[in-house]
Amino acid sequence: MPHLQTDRIEIYYEMKGEGDNLLFISGTGGDLRFSPNAFDNNLKDNFCLLAFDQRGLGQSQIPKGPYTMKDYADDAYSLLEEIGWKETNVIGVSFGGMVAQHLAIEYPEKVKKLALLCTSPGGKDYHSYPLHELESIIDDNEYAKKFVSISDTRINEGFIKANPELYENIVNQIKSYLRASGKKKNDGKLLQLEARKNHDTCKNLKNIKCPTFIAGGLFDDIAPKDNIDILNNLIMNSKKKFYKGGHAFFLEDPKAWEDIINFFKD
Image (cartoon, rainbow, N blue to C red):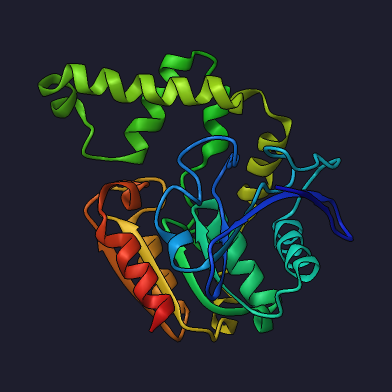
């Protein structure tokens, strides 16, 4: 798949499937070279699915920082303009959900329907877990254990004691992914985390008028339940649903993708 030079940066993107347009905006450190990614589900079987590596990540350009949340939204808009999509459905996952909020606020004409997964409106009271704090953890094992604990609150001391082998496997999977993707060594990711700290759409969510589906995991401590609730309260034409899972609930509960697909198709 090609790189595309927008009026802002060079972006790597992939497009698969047929049907209505659907833009997928990935989370922190998202890189299309690694799984799971936007295409590891059945979205591509139902839509013309467009996904891309955000600035500083994967195979896209790493422009000089600092970055702002508006930069990420403007990048997504520029990509849509270059592709020639006048309107699209949008899914934003975690950090991508923050970007999707800014996109829908700044460019409402572009967003037909919006799905916000495991994300937050930010600001003083409703920020996601400060992932930039994890970057001070040097040891991969310690980093992975901390990430696991905030990703799913069910994985507590009792769980670890009762399931030591399963817990070790989960931690090792996180460590392997970190090593493969080089996430902790990526300057673009650090710039992304800095931009993430300043995310705040609380005052502007009322400007999102498109139908919006907001979903979260019941055991997510990165984007906790209160953040999902406030998104639903502040976005006028929205509905919410919680799933039995952690931050990556959509990998645990197959009903999640089914509900999201039905939301876009209704």
